[in-house]
Length: 380
Image (tube, rainbow, N blue to C red; front, side, top):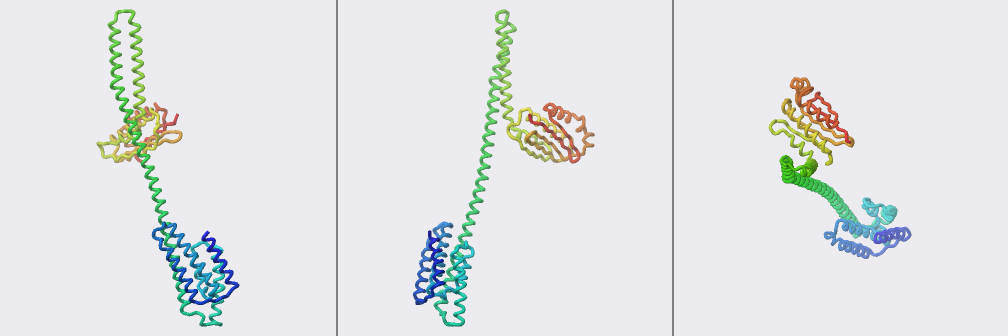
């Protein structure tokens, strides 16, 4: 509402200036302008306590007020419009509204008219008071413009800092969530291992003892009537033992962390540098887990024994349709490896081929740049 009224006042003043040419006492003009300047300064006293957005709005209002009064004073004192084109230029950083465009056009026309009058009609029309007033307005417009631009820069800087802080907080929250999920997953794995050990050590031993006792009773039993019940009891215990073993085995298999298992393959008693690149989900099937771990372990052992390189790298990736395992080192060429028995019909390579064939995978060996073993297994 304030901006609408101020712009309406500016447009109205421009229209009045085009049809009216009045002059009043310079002291009255000075009093009006001085009062506006004082009121503006009073309005700006609260700027340090304001937010950047409110500071910009207050400075914007002050500029609108000064421009409106400046144009309105021209209705009574036309020569003061000599500086109006500069006033319009000061507002170039702001949006070009109808009122400012009107002020610029009228100001240029009046300024040209004033220059002609000064030069040809009234060379002494300007006195010291007018010059001081014009300078005061020029200084005020410059001051508030710089103030407005300064607050805008501060606001943009604070907004950028806030966005950067929000992005950093979002990244930290994401990392925290991942860390918490990893801790929960590790705690779950430990608990599964504990339960599996408890079942195996306690329940498993008791069932095993019961099976042995029932078997001994069956051997020494001479009563024909008890042979069938004893056999049924032994069969039940055997079934329970098999079921318990399967449950413990499945429970332990689910708790195997494939990433940690690969990380533990790092040679500890050699000079090989070891690196692992792992990109798989948590639901890798049990047979794939054990096959990949065994294959990688065999390949690492062969590299440590036969390679003259100094680096071993394992890459495990899960693709939409298949799993991929790659073990490589930067050791000797293929011919030297055949001599050492590591390629071709070597025992280590035979074991790896058998394990790959057991899970229905595909194996390739490359020795053009170091030694690489590729294993690909399609998902079921």
